[in-house]
Structures are given as C-alpha cells and as structure tokens.
Image 1 (cartoon, rainbow over the protein chains, first blue to last red):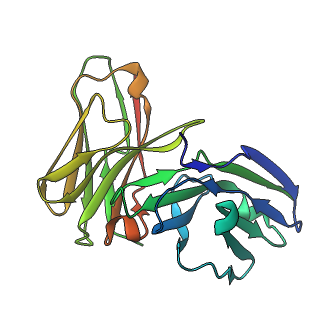
Image 2 (image 1 turned 60 degrees about the vertical axis):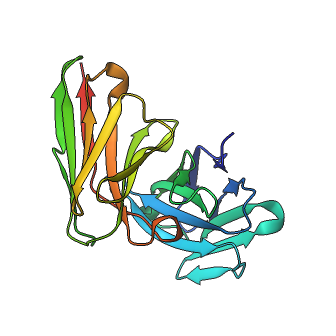
Image 3 (image 1 turned 135 degrees about the horizontal axis):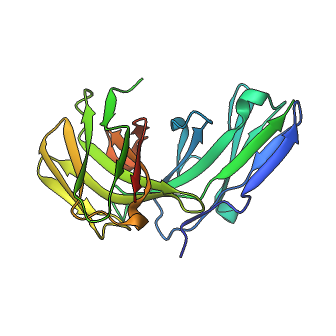
Length: 115
Length: 113
C-alpha cells in the first residue's frame, strides 16, 4: 500500500492565484516525520519543510504554508499568490520511527503557474 | 548547498553491461541513500547506508548492489544493466537518518539501450 498519496498529478493555475497541494499519508507509528520537497524544471530536489508527528502547529514561510492534520492524516501545502518560479514538481515524504531510516515519497504533483 | 557530487551525470550503456554510479559527499553525514525517479512512480528507494560497510535494501533493490567503504563515498552498481533500469538516479545524504531532512545530489541520468 502506498504510504504517501499525492492524488493531484498535475495542477495548473494562473499567476497570483492560491493553490493547495494535497498529501495524505498512512502510518501506524505514533512517531513519524513529514517532508515536502520541490523539484524545479532544472531537476534538483530541494528540501522545503520537515514536521514531526508531535507538532501539529501550522507553519508559514513567506508565501508558503503547511497544514498538518493528524485527524485526517494530511499534510497539505499551500502557495499563496503563486508565481511562475513556483512551477515545479512537489513531493511529499514520510519517515517512520518504526522503519528506521527509510523515507517514503509520494508520486509528486506537477504544478504549472501560467503567467 | 550540501556538498554532494554524483558521477557520471549522464551515461548511455547497453543491456548486459555493468554500470557503477558514484556518490561523493563532503558533509561527513552518516546516512546515504540511492533513489531512482521514474514518471508516475516518484522517488523510490534502492538502497541506503547507515555507516561504513552498513547498508540495507530499499523497495526496489533487485538488480542493484551498493558499497560504502568510506564515509564520503556510496557506490551503486548495476551488475548487468537492463532497459528497465533506464532512469534518473539520485543520491541523498542525511545527518540524522529518518528524523532529518535529505539533501540530494544533482542526479545521474542512465539510459540502457
């Protein structure tokens, strides 16, 4: 079974629109970590955020915000006032205390911001 | 930027030939990983290492082997390359393992004809 599901394969928005990327995870652990990574067209993978299972406080970093809800096993990522530079593939990932040092990635959401 | 270098960055080879990809880090991180990226599959773990000579399999380890004789180097070997191993391979490092973030290399594009 997929541990991390990113149901949105591709999303297109017009510049300045807000967009939310969904991430649903599955785990039996009480201790786990969630991550988001960005892969721009140039291909590198860039770390965006890490959240542990005991910290449900939402986080905001500039135009980026993350909503962690344990009740729905979701860790959604919102970009406010999107820009063309936000065009990328975004990956959500999970690591569990029980399985040690492995990271499980979703299949990614390709975001295109249209000028 | 994390000091991670992958080599080669691009390689074209023929079915049945051995291929070795190298990952070199200058961060002295304990954990190193090899992932492959394929359309529709995201990133899938091949093997990882939690120390010198300590390695473990990931979800897609068949057909691959790894070695880590020094902290800074993690080698991925395809003993006999197949077309299904055509992919982009990413090396990643982590100081804390599963509790910390991954830092990725630039990727190695392998084409098996």
